[in-house]
Image (cartoon, rainbow, N blue to C red; front, top):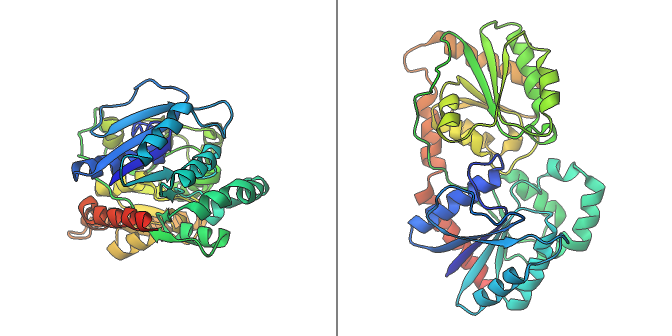
Length: 376
């Protein structure tokens, strides 16, 4: 069986877009397991400007018409249909060209799996609600109906998918995660500070940044040693700058986008990682920090709450609330101050990633998902 991951972009892990990281990691692990896997990317830039990778990659030009399908991609799908058993795995939702791809796959009798990566969670659907409702009825409903399986990364997505169409065949399965190697930072931070961190796209509607800044400010006014490191960039950077003024002077550092060892070196210096998202598929940045032994504060909307509770590696907020965040930070700060032998949450953090997000344990479930798609 051949597995084709179809994505907008190039599955470049050195981008802030989490879908790129997930697809890159999944294809890499499947290739290492001996599976016949490739990534096909739809992009306006056809240059191979991404790090070396183990799996095959084909790039196809994006059309000016968002529903348009490049002739080269149409031809590749025809060739795929005639080359034996194959499953196409679509990543993302509310993408016009996927409607055209779905119609072509149906005509070629090629099954596909759809992973919306958080786009169908209730909070995500509320953004541009009217436009999404119209688009869903005209186009997205077809994409969903024809999918052999809708692959959900977290429970919030299952709720969203069932709200769209309760008859859809869903599969709840997280992706795995390969822990990064801890690195020695080029410029270690000064000791004695309690460092809270965030890493991701600066998009308040998605990431709950107003909550993050307000909750940290409330906490930092009572804990003078507190710092907040914000790694990333995005459309709301100016708003984040403004919100940071509510915190004690100099306590919030906007570090911009960082990648590779530089990012890991920063994450490894944190005492807490905070992620107050309003919706997610499954946020990679949290797993990166937790794999380094950094406790976390997450909202239920991250779809990581059950894991954090089960493994005891941080705090879970019912919703993105500054008051709840400040209280959670106080509890973790108290543990940090105590420094009681055996009280560190780091072993629990590493155990969560090594157990619940272990690729060798999850790959058979992905293979079963593709076999079910073929059977359907």
